Image 1 (spheres, one colour):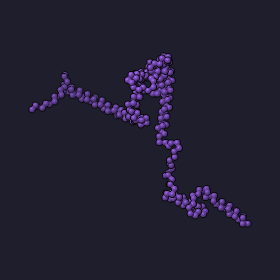
Image 2 (cartoon, helix red, strand yellow):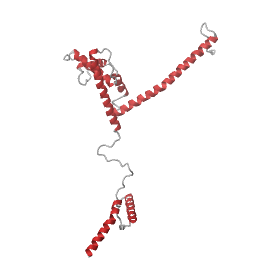
Image 3 (cartoon, one colour):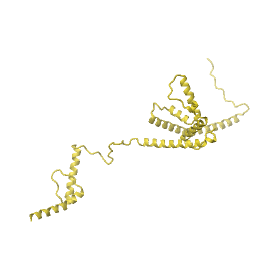
Image 4 (cartoon, rainbow, N blue to C red):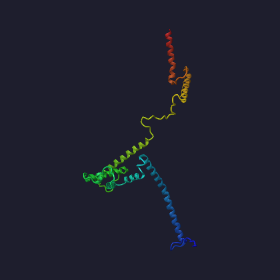
Length: 262
């Protein structure tokens, strides 16, 4: 049987005494410990932000359709929104050509702006391109940003388009908020809910009869307090104004009957 091997004892680096090695080891371990703790502290807000991103994406997928709008698709759109328009057009042009070469279906026609429509003058084409750049910047809330490489003659075009993009984003945000707030609201023509109490009992049910008896008893009690005659059998619940008017009407009737006798 072979003899058991023992791990080699840690030896100080060449040229260091044991005390020097110990001091350096503890020194570096203290720095590593602090750096590790900093990573843990930074991880907590990162994890919270990541969870919030996931929840936000899930909300979007629930509204737009989970099958069509995957997390990958939405994040891909986010990446495209932050890209330069010229790069996006070049990518779409390459994708278009590749799909044609591979015999895959292509929806519609590629933009003449991307492929280079010979009918559009170069100056007008450049202005359209920078206008589109500004519009995309405005959609991201960047209304005072001039893209790199933009000629000074197109600066106003970019800024005007950025304002239009921002206005559209704001209008769409308000519209989306109205859609979200409108959920759970009754549709037009729907019966409103009774917010003041329980629903009325169905006629003929024990509950309806009990409510009717209670109303009759209340009317009789009101008549008794006013000195009037209570109706025989089932009656109705008169209002206070009607009960108050019964006394004068009775006196007038009695005077008419006396006049007829004489």
